[in-house]
Length: 147
Image 1 (cartoon, rainbow, N blue to C red):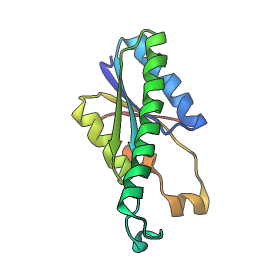
Image 2 (image 1 turned 120 degrees about the vertical axis):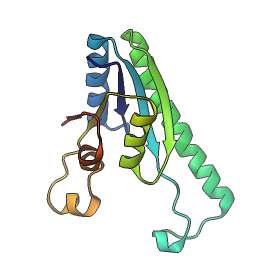
Image 3 (image 1 turned 30 degrees about the vertical axis):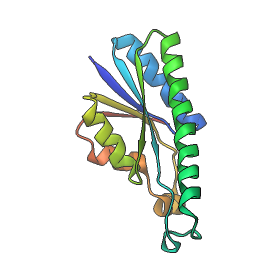
Image 4 (image 1 turned 60 degrees about the vertical axis):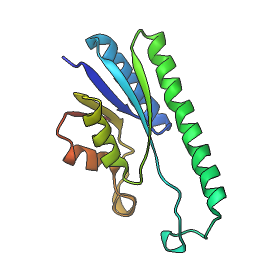
């Protein structure tokens, strides 16, 4: 059925449930998994909504974010190993999270994307948008959304 499943995670409790479901599905179908965490870049100017920060500090902060993301996907890899599922841990830097998820799925020849929906409603959804909704509407491969 599925050969390679991309599981997008952000480390939240709901995302952890999607990770568990994705790993279980991979175990049932014999699929391998790409565990993906997208790390945004640090805003670089006043117009990005932050105070200007020294370049060295930006590099340090982005490294901390990348290191934390690597720890997160490595945990998914370890959980997969415990369940007998082959997992490749991937961290991508991008400000366009949904596009990065879709691009990673294409790059790794995935035939399913598994991710969580944070279930924002009303004004929060309008203001914050929905990365999951963007993936759903722009992906050319199936997307399994867990709530």
